[in-house]
Length: 348
Image (spheres, rainbow, N blue to C red):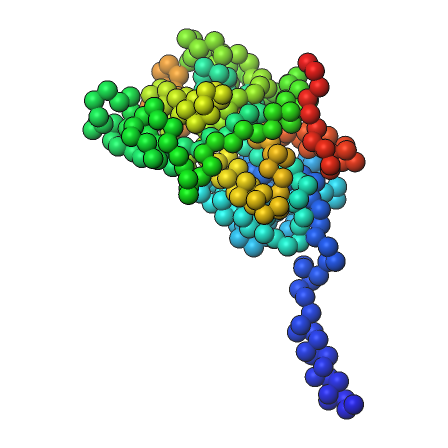
């Protein structure tokens, strides 16, 4: 065989060879996926957002570019992968891009959504952390201007396939609407972390002082269990909080109680459950941790506008890592058991 022919064969072989990033024999098994919505600035060395504490402290040492996700993901040697999805609607596309990446095996992965939120003053205080027992989607709805609603209606927001507020309706074709997270796993995470000290200080105390009629809002930050409500819009106010409480009650058939409000949990849960139907993920292995950066309506003396509490975001970023990281580390340390069997809460 001539030299020229051999060269042609070698060139063709190089062109047909797989890309280096996809050339591994088998997908990398991921133990835990940590999901944040956003970061402020860089992933290291500046003012932290939802992601930076995980990168610097866990630590997550390897950078991985995943097509379809704006920021690079981070990977640890012990099998923890962390991503920032982007906020609101972008989270659905990012989650799909992650789950379709052929380099990773998520079939036994645990997923932890850890991010900041607004807290209902009747349930908790700024700086607190809530493990979600339910995630509820409030995006698929009809909206009528509250100044033009049918007489007797409490508000102009009501569910698809319903005739008005008070009817559960259906999100068919749009969303799963309400997801109950595995109770045993959620309680396991809560009991593991319920005594963790959370950041507090004069700034948070000053915010609490504006809620003298709400005992829960005046308490120091704590870890508890409650439901999260997710929308792709910021909302604020007493009346909207009344609506949100009612929506959570309606969509969970009375089982859920509003605690935290955010913008991405519905995207994460809906996408995970869609891909679970193909066997890519186990939908039982999902935890949601929301930490309060602000209240869902303004305290005494505060204007009625969307604004973040002084010191609230920094406290919530810190609380998310303090409460979330022991759970991630426990899952990794107990992987011999937890790869096959979900951790479950023992008796109190």
